[in-house]
Length: 230
Image 1 (cartoon, rainbow, N blue to C red):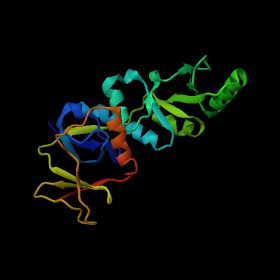
Image 2 (image 1 turned 60 degrees about the vertical axis):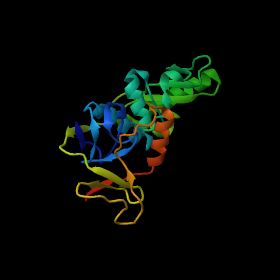
Image 3 (image 1 turned 135 degrees about the vertical axis):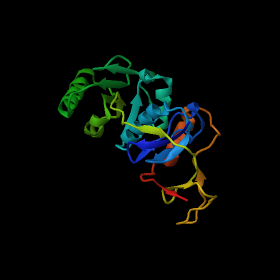
Image 4 (image 1 turned 180 degrees about the horizontal axis):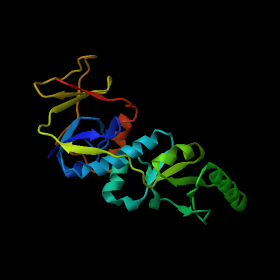
């Protein structure tokens, strides 16, 4: 069915092209209110994960997720810019473990975090990176003090609903505008004259982390996005 993004942050991240016949590439930002593809409504959960990771990445720290999200959830996290999967790291939980590069902590507050890190460092006299498992709500508190965050929940709500028609969508990356074309063709931005890039497509690139990272980097600096009906 044709779907539109109807409730959530001003800009969400699309994920779940494997559930669609026509959609944006995974990792593509979608403006609130915008029709985006011919998909299974289950993409809303994957978009929620991707959007949450992108918002956490804006804090300037590495973001990791757990395999407990499932294969689809992990891929959605990478579409949002995730840096890795916790279980693929050499880590120990709660304190330093032999051969561990990362120490994963679950502190209640910043004071508990910094005191625990100091105590571990005094005991082991070895280098290690600090990860904190937290929700998006707590990420802002811990981000300035750690090497990375492991998101464990608090996914941003993203809702979609069925629409009757899927317009052609062209994006101007310079102006941050998506043109929803219902009445005719438009190939260039009416404000700056640059050629528009097609947002919704039936062409699916390989479902791989390399593709997800490439798309994320392309749009990482796109902080605002609105649509114009033409």
